[in-house]
Length: 508
Image 1 (cartoon, rainbow, N blue to C red):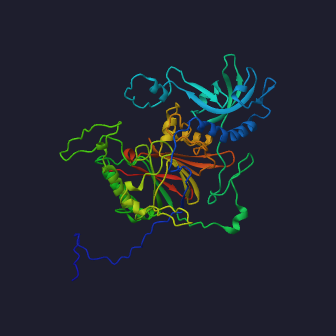
Image 2: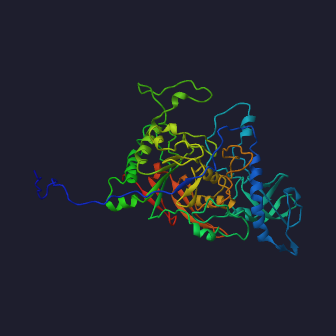
Image 3: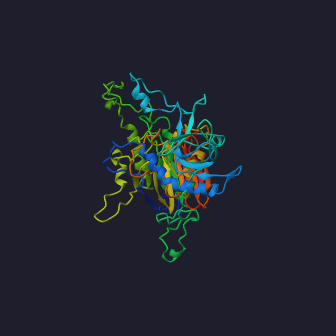
């Protein structure tokens, strides 16, 4: 029996209109293991070795930049000379030397001061800045031979933090301080062409971006890209109740799945080939505590400062539900953050798949004998993390590196701090001084050996983006990803141009 159609009524017969099937774009994706640690970790070694490793790796690069800039430089008839060590600097002699910056700041946390106290006291709240209002902060340059205090006008215009490698030119004054005339940094490392990021890259003063013209005849498999996009979200902030922004989370899920959207928006969403979650997916708030059956908060004895009864599985359960909803339609890369269930010290290792009973079925499967590890549809990775997406070299962090650099400087420009890290060739310069880190002995993985094409940082106060260029033609797209729990914003990156756009999800 046919359903009669009445004008002005919601009652309608079945439509004969044919709708085109929309398929999601696939993603060319290769994670790298740059920041993965061995299963057996050792903490007996000294942390100070990391800074000497960093200086050893970056000294040739910064020396090369300084030699090009200051070759035959002279003042008052005196030509600048290079000295190999900090202690070789002589008073009144125009020279330049390279080393590691160390910021002597009274307000900076110092574990040795805490240990030396007779009585333990409660930890003070974290500071917004380490800068001293009384001007007591000192800038030092050190190497394996010793330490030298830096003074001079150029220091006020240069962003410097503990752990960055620089070369300074000037002379020692009567007070024994080094009067700085100019400063140089290593600048951006060599950068490979797109789709050739795993090839060896030569480093040198005359090397441009790597060209592969000789290999054009054996072209790589390059998937055809039809406006593909990468979605990056940070600070989802799942809590025990998740009442604060539960509607926004549901709307985000519907947006990513293409549900309840018009055909034009659905077509646009289908171009999102991968979702990257950049840290702080679990909230660190008062709701993340467990309650007994009566509804009263449990008060159990704390052993070694840890109260097992305070663990609440609800935030992780909510997060697992979200992942299980998204994963059937798009791959997800999960980077841990400061508030997530992972080790605190950098590099944070991947969140264990056991935390996600539903989502882990989409994870990687153990390789067979002789096979390489293949990334799963659900890829839990380290923080920092680097990989290749659509042929681009991508570097991302959960935000701790920028948040810690922020405390050293007066500037509020987060993109400027990201740019400085790239030009320092170090994505976490303040580790291990004020940023907890694993004590590496043989290598410093935070040093950037190659230049990424895309560098994003999660859990920032607001969205911002820029493109920077290097002296050899390198280009990096910088993206500060805001906290979704506070802004409701998701960043979309075009995989052809690396241009970033913003999608705001709001209930109002």
